Length: 182
Image (cartoon, one colour):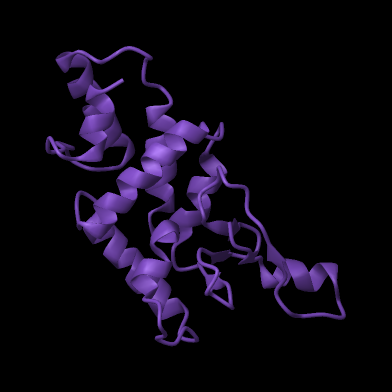
């Protein structure tokens, strides 16, 4: 994994003679969204030289604080892949994610258009709360295949956790594939 900038406010407190961002290498099993809940800053891409101000999107820090147990690496991998596909194909949560992107863009006017689109470089950060929710929900799946009734109950439960009126993935949706294959 490439290094990412950490919170500039945390760095300033640790090294008063240097006010430049430090770089860290995140663990490979964590989502690529580094969030400082204390200073409301985040980074999601190595091309970001300045961390993002995320005060306009409090759900980003709230999701990190309310996760009781970290999700397993397998569930996190599945959920990251699923939410990335949903994001790229404007499925299920696209309105919420578009609104979050718009708020982040408005709160960070210092971000200039560059070779990388903010829509893509911030994708992991924008989908972060839902990725964690999906991962922790996938961790509760039994090791055996679900019956049709269990699949329906799981989707109903997940829709509630994601604050959606309903969730009905198509046959080609990765969530559906995860539920039907073991």
